[in-house]
Length: 317
Image (cartoon, rainbow, N blue to C red):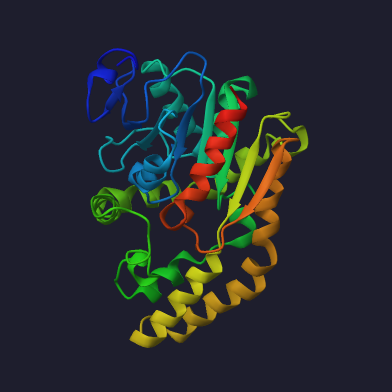
C-alpha cells in the first residue's frame, strides 16, 4: 500500500501494510500528508506494548508532522511472524513495511524502553543518511539487561495477579483520552501480548549482545544529527509496586527484598549513566529528565516527547 495512494484515502489512516514476502504489520498514521523531503516520525514501543501506547504523543504532535506508530508482529492488530523475535529481525520487518508503503527517509526514530535497542538496529540497517534524528524515551541500551538484570519474576509476583500498570497507578495518572486508555488496556491484556513478551524477552540478552558488537557508541554514527535522551524515573514505579504489595499482602518477603536490593544495588547505581551513554551516538545531543513520570513517559508526560520531536523535525528542514 503506497503512502500516497490508498493510504491517504483512508480517513482513519490505519491498516495492515503487507510486504512482498507476505508479512504485514498494522500501522497508524497521524498528521498532515507529508511534504517532499520532510522527515517522518516512526515510533517503536517497548516490550509488551503495542503502538497504541504512542497515541497521546501522536495527538500532541504539531499537525504538520507526519508520524507512524505500529504494532510489532504478534501485537494487537499485527499477525505473528515466524522469524525469531530478535531486535535485528524486528528492525528488518519494520524496514520492509516502510519500503512496501513507500514511506521513505528521512526518518525521526523514537524508541521507548527495549524499543531503544530496536531503533538502533534500524539505524544499523538503513544507515545514518536515512536518519534525521533520534529520541530515546527511558530507553535500554546494549548494557542495560546484562548489567541491571531486571527482576521480572519478582515484579510479577508482587502484582498479585493484577495489571502492573494498574498497580503502579498508570491507569489513573496518564494523559490518554478514555478511548486511548481503553485501547492500551485491552492490548496489554491480550493473550498474544503475553506470548510476544515472552518470545521477545527470551532474546533480550542475545539482542543486546548483537547490538554491542556494532560498537555504535565508539563511532558516533549520527554525526551531528540530533539525539535526545529523555529519562523517566523507574524507581518511582518500583517503589509504588512495593507499597501496593505490602498493603495488599502480595508476593513474598523474598520478592520484596529482591526489588529493594535491585533498586539500591543496581538501578540507582547504573540506570542514569546507561541512559546518558546514548548521547554518544551524536555530537549534537541533549538530555531531558522527566519530572513527573516513571518508566512510561509517553503516557504521563507525552508533551516532552512531542516537543523534542518537533525541535528535531524543524531543525531538519
